[in-house]
Length: 110
Image 1: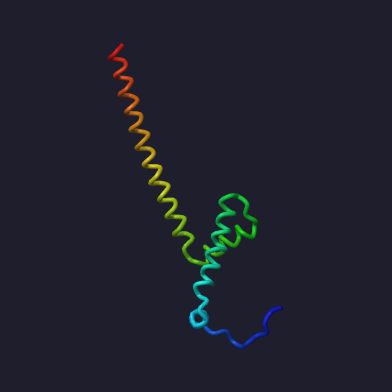
Image 2: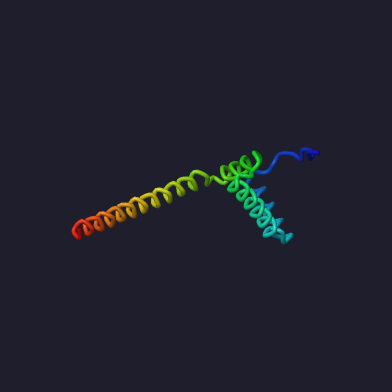
């Protein structure tokens, strides 16, 4: 059942600071964050194992968008993958050179 209206809402910054100060005073801030981290970790696990519900997918994306960090996180992952791709290309080129050197040695021995 929704709560009855209580007049104009305070500005979000005032309401949020008041909320967290009250939580600190009650000694429950750490447990609130622990619960949040646990829930997000569980959602992440379900997404990674492809056992997530549509609600899980929606929740994860909504939370990440609301954080304002989604684009930054995705761009960081893209850059990391591009770095790994460069490393693999360099390793593949080095292996090609090693194989070529072995073939040249074998040709000289025969």
